[in-house]
Image 1 (cartoon, rainbow, N blue to C red):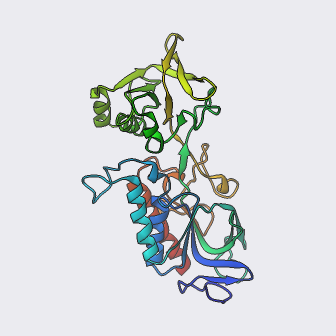
Image 2 (image 1 turned 120 degrees about the vertical axis):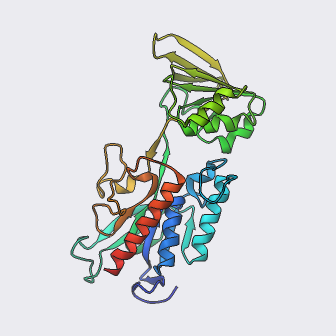
Image 3 (image 1 turned 30 degrees about the vertical axis):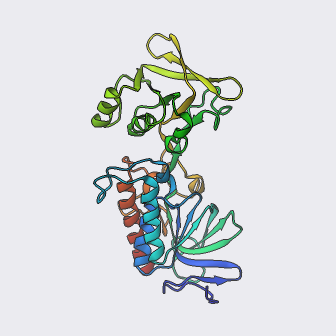
Amino acid sequence: MGEVSEVNGTGEMSETAGTKSCDIAIIGGGPAGLTAAIYAARGGAATVVFERQMVGGQIVTTDWVENYPAFPAGISGADLGELMGRQAAELGADIQLFVTVTALRRRGDGAAGGDDGGPAAFRLETDAGEVWSARAVIFATGAVPRKLGIAGEAEYTGRGVSWCATCDGAFYKGKTVAVVGGGDAALEEALFLTKFAAKVYVVHRRHEFRAADIIVQRACAHEQVELVTGFVPTEIQGDGQRVTGLALQSVEDGSARLLPVDGVFEFVGTDPVSELTAGLLASDERGYVVTAIDGATDVPGIFAAGDVTTDPLKQVVTAAADGATAAASALKYLDN
């Protein structure tokens, strides 16, 4: 780090009065954030990425990605995230892992310019006690799994209730588990769990699944998978130590059913990680950030990409595309 007063667009980080400075700060180190870092660093911008977990973000919890270009045989989510992170770092991006941005503030009015008459600058604070100044910000914080909100869920979280089959599947070797959900993630994770569990129930409130037909066909044909449709979970039961059952209720006649299971895996959608944007950026009723086609938000100098945005398709390839677009727009913003 050089002892200079400000970043001046040369692609060099700087420090001043305890504040570290960069051209582009990227919040989130998943496929969207890492792709943005690749494009921003290649564009000559001093780039820092803040990721609260491992490099790759939530993609590391995906056992196998088989629809990302250039990997016809598929690739594990962890490996894909690691490759993206390595590429961004080799291009010069500063990737800070296990660091959470806790506050984001604008300096200047965001339209007429910052304190120095140039582009508006942004102040970021982290849980590591650091303060950063950035000339542009890209939000790529993604989304997190939604909870069912039923009795027993909180009590047995980590003791039979999980949102990551890749992380916890091996604990259920020879046991019985239930997967709740009807999308691609739910059925893909159910099929993954058959590597360990002797029996996998798939519980879905509807009789039709939102998942791709080929995934539904695989699940229907698998001898270890039993589809339980037309039911919703009402309670996760246990013995005080571990999960012992999942109580269900029919959406048609209200009848009850109890599945004896050792674990419950929930895949019922996601919620955006957008707490930092509340009151700052325009969002929809669910909290997803609204962007223009170029990734720009309603605040000049702030861009967003990936699952945190209102884009309907939440896939690795679309997140990466969003990241590239947001970085290109941020670079153009800085040039102007």
